[in-house]
Length: 93
Image (cartoon, rainbow, N blue to C red; front, side, top):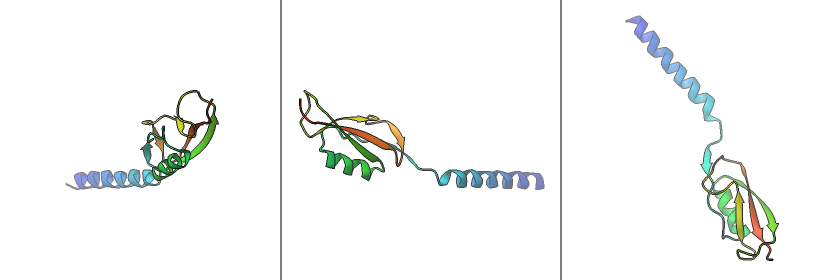
């Protein structure tokens, strides 16, 4: 009887220790789609999801000038909260 109780108590203690060890780590989140947004709207969206944004301007023949035409990592990728997303903004041809 005592052996079962001690075993159960050990399992509970182990589960608590594992829970405490992982509780402080940042949560993983899915990157939202910012393509087609203005840089300000993209930065706001990414910040609301817990990400930082870096803006990179790029001449492009496609996509609206002044709008986000790409993001890296791409939308749908899972990344740790606080991670940085590079948004590429079209500056025209």
